[in-house]
Image (cartoon, rainbow, N blue to C red):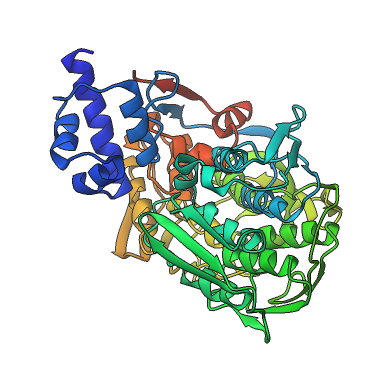
Length: 508
């Protein structure tokens, strides 16, 4: 390896570490090495094996090495006008919940059209490592899941588990299978510290106690403790609700969950639990009544519904490029507030008649986007738990506000620092002012122009930057795009089918 290559790899590692928000000392702890060694690596003064580079990539949630190559970057040539039609894929978050939920079932689960994304791949790796057999059945991404008689928690794939936040959802189903177990700390998006306490308070009524030490959750279950009154969630979170639901599914009595999320992935999990023979009342509301079963052993087939966040991403692509396209299979129940907000801003569109998703429950429409002249909304835009504007859809309004006339205030109250990443739009010519860690003011209209940006480490802001690049004059480069692959399947290729000019490439 030449000094030049060592220097380039050192720069990549330094940039990825900074975007992950880690100090050299913290990265050294993750890799069981010294801070001075990390400093030498970043200075290009250290010989590195491919194994070490891969370990660094895993620790930083950045695929620095993939079959001996560097991270994937995207080159975008714009401005773009999109045309044609595109179909929304099934939900990332529902897919993850259903994969974890399959642990409740001792029988075979077949999931239809699963989103084949990196977050799903990580969960599958964790499942495989503890003895669950999974098999992709066809090109439609149908997935078969067969659990073992006994789970092997001592063999859990720690590297995969640490690269996903979703591993905390294993607590709900596992507490009925084992009296004591350990799970590695969760990872995923770098969105600030989000406490696990809401999960703990949701699961304590089932006898679960968790201590977090040495990079792992140490769980123990007291079988004498069972829910005696309604479980009131302190946070109306999606994954917290899912954890409570999965714990209740194998509790043979009736559990009442109050302040439950009624968001799309929670509804998909409820519909799946019903197929398992669990009684769930109140789907779509904030009070769920779950009558579980002591043992679940059935062969089931379930199709998760389409992803409203991907639908919003595609809608944003059309709006920022002022393009007329058709977006098919949009779950309208989870997009109505977003569309009403866009309508107030001057967005023109039409909807098809409603039809049902493959799960037979979720209402879908096709959206035709039309030429629009946008203006800033009169009020700030902020998210709320469903049926409010989706928390994950809020960042897309940054790119939309940037092409609208006037000032738009976005208030991202949920995450401690996600709004900060929206200031990356300034590098493309945007006028985004960070008011505090939760609020940004966006002045439009913007005439975007191409530049080079390292991908923000949070999924939705990363996609927002990519979509703004579609509207940018000239050539843009988005570096280290693994985080996008965590939540989207072939996004660049699918945008290219609509007329975008996006090329993937690697440095090394």
